[in-house]
Amino acid sequence: MPNKKGSLYPKDWMAKAQKDLKRVGVLLSVKDTAGAGFHLQQAIEKYLKSYLLSKGWKLEYIHDLPKLLNYANEYNPKFVGFRILCERVTEYYTSERYPFFDEIAPSGKEIKKALEDTKKLIRLIKCNYVNFTNQKRQGD
Image (tube, rainbow, N blue to C red; front, side, top):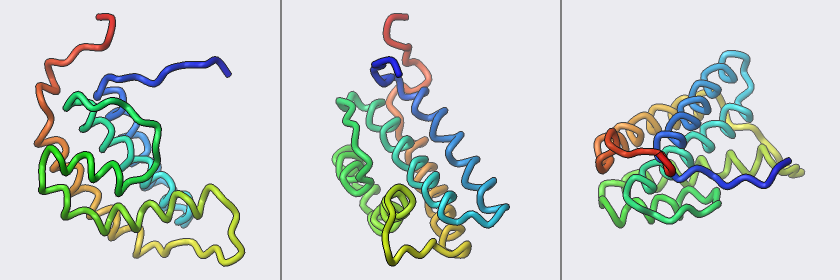
């Protein structure tokens, strides 16, 4: 695989996040709650990174949603209300990525509740972009 650098353009991260969010619905429809949870974590991670990049944040390759939320909270204290969501969904990421002896997939009900909360987080993110529509890709 070629050594590629990640985009610093918020819209690129937003587009990837939207794809992950769609995957959550597809996986829920076939009752793959572990896969849905994983993609929900990925969606939140990319939405948060998109928001942070729109604020001039230096991209970090981390998967820790509470840490990303801490960064977002520096720009807007309303993000603190999503701490429990981010802590819970971070667990979905690790349980899907690594084998554990006591592995239990989240329930469909749990994923649906997290998805509802995620949509509230996405609304907050989209309402707080800085000049999002006027930003250009690097090199444009």
